[in-house]
Amino acid sequence: MSQLQTTEAAPAKVNLTLHVTGQRDDGYHLLDSLVVFVDVADRLTVRLADETALAVTGPMSAGVPSDPRNLVWKAAELAGLRAEITLEKHLPAAAGIGGGSSDAAAMLRAARSLTGHGFPDPAAVLSLGADVPVCLEPKALRMRGIGEVIDPVPELPPLCLVLANPGVEVPTPAVFKALTTKSNPPMPPALPPWSDAIDFCHWLGQQRNDLEPPARSISPEIARVIDALAVTDGCLLARMSGSGATCFGMFEDEAAANSAQASIAARFPTWWCASGAVL
Ligand code: C5P
Image 1 (cartoon, protein in one colour):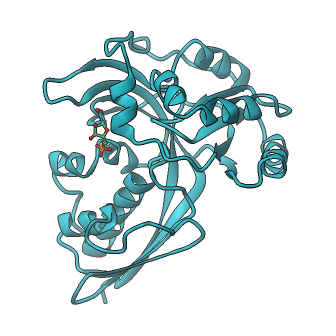
Image 2 (tube, rainbow, N blue to C red; image 1 turned 90 degrees about the vertical axis):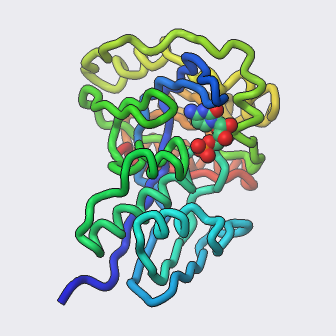
C-alpha cells in the first residue's frame, strides 16, 4: 500500500553572509550568500485527502494564514497534491530565517515522498519565493543569482547558533529599497577550506550582510539584538540573517549556545530566542 501520511521538519535558514552584488532590470537583487540550516524548525504533517485543508498550530502561529495565501498551500498546488496539512509554527514569520520558504520547501519534500514524483520545475519552485530553492535540501550551500543558483561549499566545522528576534517585522522589499549601493563585492570565487570554528568565524568576519545597515536604519532594535548576542560568553560572531530582524550568535559548542540563549531569554523576555546545531 502506498504511503498516505508523512511529516517533514522545516528548519530555520540562516544567511551567514549575504552580499548584494547587483540588481536585475525587474528589480530583483543579485545575491551571494552562504546559507546554513539550524536544528530549530517548523513541523509539517501532510496526509493525502480529496480536498486541501491547512491548520496552523504551534507557539508562533499567530497571524499566519491557513488559506491559499500560505506558501505551504501554494507549494502543495504546485506539486499537484491535495492534502490535509498541519503546519506547526515554531519559527517567527517574516523574520529573515526563511520560515515561509522553508515550510514551502518542506511541503515539496513531503509531496515528493508521498507521490514518488520529483520536485517541480526549478523556475516554478523559484516563483514560490527566492529562498525556496536553497531550502529544498537543508544543508550548508552557496546561493547566488536571485536565489536560483545553488552550489556546494567546503565542509563546515561543527557549530551552534543562537537565534534572537526582537518581535519587530522588517518588510524585505523596504530593506532592499533602503540599501544605497546595489553593486557590492561578492564572496571570493572559491570558498576556502576552514580548519575549525575559530578559523571559520575569522573568515566570516571578513564577509558581510549588506542588508544589515539598511535594516538597522529601519529598525534600531536590530543593533540591540546583535550587541546582546555579541556579549554572551563564547560568542564568536554576531550578525543579522537575511533581511532581518532575526540575528544569530555563533558558538563552538552546544553548552555555550544553550547558556547564551538562557541569558538572552532572561534579559529580554519578550524576544523570540532559540538555539540549535548547524545541520
Ligand atoms: O522572493 P521573495 O518573496 O522571498 O522576495 C520578497 C521580496 O524581496 C521581493 O518582492 C523583492 O522585493 C525582494 N527580493 C529582491 N531580490 C531577491 C530576493 C528578494 O529584491 N533576490
